[in-house]
Length: 286
Picture 1 (cartoon, rainbow, N blue to C red):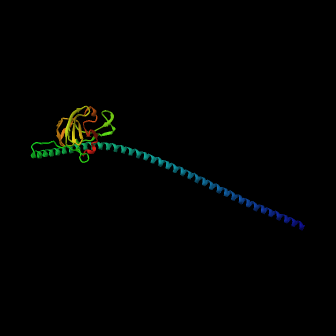
Picture 2: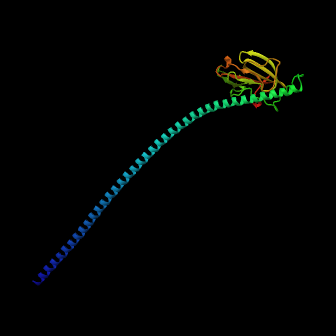
Picture 3: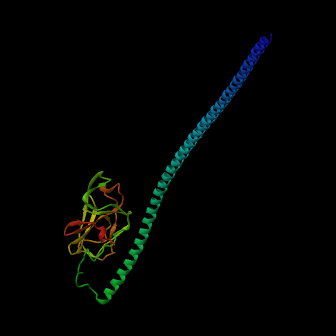
């Protein structure tokens, strides 16, 4: 009996240990499961947070890009508006500049005319004084004046006050508006006003007075050393062939332009020749 009890007690003890171990094992498994579930939930929660953060970041990036595009578009609009305003300003400045040039041209022409008239009055006064002095010394001029001119040392007076509307050009052709063609120009065409007086550019002798189709009434003067001056588009001459004139004396007045210069308007045809060859008068005019 005793042996049986011991065996039974031992068996029951072994079962108890087994049950206890199983419970411990189940507890460990349960704890591991709970830990694993907890970890999974934590990871899932963290993953969701990461997704939310990524979505927020993407939304912020999209908002930033949209804002940059809007700012760029606004800058482009402002730049376009500024460019349009600048073009409008430049156009207005050009128009104002053209008007100013016109006003300056009119003013300059009036000033030139005024200065020219003053200069003519002064020259005429000097001529009268010189004539009076010469008359007091001798009653009659017994000899003709000696004509001499040098391009190196002498200068020509402007015969009228005005702008050059057609330049001297013998090396290439220039455009003539009235003729609507290009051709060489052996003279300078000086803008003038109808009835304005034309003065002698240098002391000389009138060698010819003729009426030409292109330049109308035309006067040619010998000023010495092979130099000649030709004045065209004249009327009401105060001189004739063989007359001697001093620099500054009036030889005629501006006439209506011939049909060759109708578009150019009233003007003086002024040519300088040396031994029969046309020269550019501009370097010689003072």
